[in-house]
Amino acid sequence: MRAPIQRVTDVDEPRIVGPITASHGINEFFSIVIPPVIPLLITDLGITYGQAGFLLTIFFLMYSVFQLPAGVVADWVGKTRLMIVGLVGMTGGILLAGMAPNYEALLVAQTITGISGSTFHPTGMSIISDVESGATEGKAMGVFGFGGTVGTMAAPLVVGGLAAVAGWRVALVGAAVLGGGLTLFVVYAMLSANSTTPSIRADGGSTVRRRLRNIRNVAGVLMTREIGLLCLITLFLSLQHRAIQTFTTSYIAAETGASVSISNLAFFTLLAGGSVASLWAGELADRVDRRYIGIGTAIATAILVGATIAVTRLASGVPSSILIAGLAIWFAAIGFAMYASYPVKNALISREADSAYSGSLFGVVQTGSALGSASGPAVFGVLATEWGVVAAFPAIAGVSLVLALLFGVLVLLD
Image (cartoon, rainbow, N blue to C red):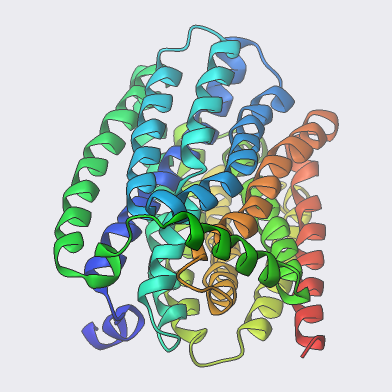
């Protein structure tokens, strides 16, 4: 058992990849604390699915607006410093959300959390890209993705569980306390790595001359067709990803009539499937053409998500317990297919990055991610309001097909 696990996690710099991976978990946990309590927010605050989706939209809108500046600033002042500042800011934003008396206050809290969260991917991903060799980039990005899915998996368990017992406000405050404690661990681990690893010790910012040279270099890289396509792939992958994440709990509840806590278990299986896929696909991406993996996983996601349209017809007369169990397995498969694309895409970006301007490059590409993340919940929130969440959910398959097409174009450019 140990050999397969070691094969997919054997990276060059585990003392750096480890805390960055933990940081990814914290970031994703904070990013997804709202979806598990959406049914409660709708009831308690009297809002619509569209308004609930906009809570995610405002978060990721801030993510997109500030991500490119965050990448540039990271190359100037130091990636590690900026990453830690962002995690602390997210903790404060979620704490404010837990104390929010109304919908408007929640929007303000999500704005603060989104601005703070915008610092993470340009810093965390670029640090991994800087310290890992080409032979282990896919593996390292798979481990990095695994941390993110574990953090996301914790959201329906921690936030959903606390909300079922004590309400959504207590659940969000509890999430802030947990994330803040883990942030302290990351600070300690990064300080330890800082003292022993030359590549991280050097991460202290840059001179004015070097800054200007970096801007010219990243501008040249961004003018390539490959980076333009990777930006589009990142956008559509995130649009698909956040739409599925945001409305899985609501889909299960509407389809089966189950409680929020039971529906969050199916959300958990979606993320469990994704965590396994991230490690598997990351290791595979170092051995197989990454673009073909992207095509295959996007098509598989389209088929699995699109097939949810048949559930209503097939579920007639099926006991609710069996239906919930079947959907939990089905959503685990969706999670596996969907998350397998992430380390593939990240490794493709890492191949184009230079340590001197990797923060700026990842900031630009991840801006596409934030735009997709902002669009997904809003677009499908409106569709869910108009059609009902069960009817709207399969429409996400169309996004997956576009994603497969973009990976295919990347192959044709060779």
